[in-house]
Image (cartoon, rainbow, N blue to C red; front, side, top):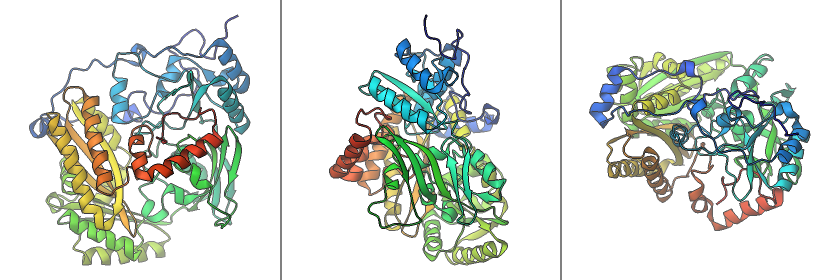
Length: 546
């Protein structure tokens, strides 16, 4: 008798809980908004953007490559997780066929056969994960850990490598608050919890994690750890890797429970092997994290600076003096002007010719008042002009919605994508100029005028992250058009002394620059770790390691 997965006879009906995002766009379709006619006309006049006739397929029309798994494979997988947590239905495979970068979404619009995992499994605990890894090692099946599917660098692409099939290992069932230590200020969270789920569980006990990347609504705790995520509140609470106190990881070689104390001199910190490892060394199942009480007070204030250099110097002064905002960020002149064109809530003509900065402060009333006063003093002395709280509140209200605008721009015939890097303060202007010029030159060669915008997204005493947004008219083949621009930008970043990624991770997209980033010996170290923990090479092939 032929083996049947939970999908049953209707391949178009999902058998498993689906990821929360639309299969061919970012997020919740109810939050997507088409561009206004005024914006469409502005895009046409400024960049030559014209609407392209869309032939994108519906989900039912997408053609996926047939599953390469045999009935024997499926029976063995079902014996581990149960038929109710295994599916080969196209409706389950398609939403896990990649991430949400612009190239991902452009590929979704193709009517050619598309890659997808050969099956999806939802393990319920570490024992099932260990059994799946053993089974897949034996049967030469690749395993791609899947959280929220928010990667914008190809981090969850269903790559088989030299293996014969690929499995999407969805961690959504690992969704509990496993422990809460209110004395130490630590919580153990399941890797499959989304950002909102984690905050809801903690808030019920009066606590908060405070990690708010743009992907917050959909990304997961495990994904935050596996990609070294950095949230918009990092000035106050640190990057996600700063919050991590311990990890549990299932590898083909065994289970690791890392992080015994707040600090240790017991050799190299093995947690660092898995923070940013993108699922190539093991499957992160639980993370112990530093938490803090829910803030009693919050203050918002926006600022205007005459130019980007003045604003950057002001942010540097705040970071180096430890003034203490929870959020601090600065848009350049181009990004500020575009934001002004999109909304009437960022300070009117005071901002139009300059640069907008946003600050937010959280904590006790005493902490907020002290930090706010100190930061105001620094920013005023550095040439800033206060715009009051409304522009900062407007930014916060829409802080997670930029990807919806990207999708609307794609629908209107524009090419829109982002990339990021980081460097020392002394090198910031050089790096910003090099990347901007590389992007504009590459897109000009492709026949497109472009708009390159930038903001400082995260600050440190010694440097900052630069986050670029690129908009151009789609010309010829958009995938090739962006590929050339991305290549030019990546080369410029490394040549100008930046890191190839500050918080988007490596995945497939940044892998070509990894040897230049970490050196030949660094690559040998990563390969040695891979060989020790995953000798069959089943975990997330084609990512991170050159």
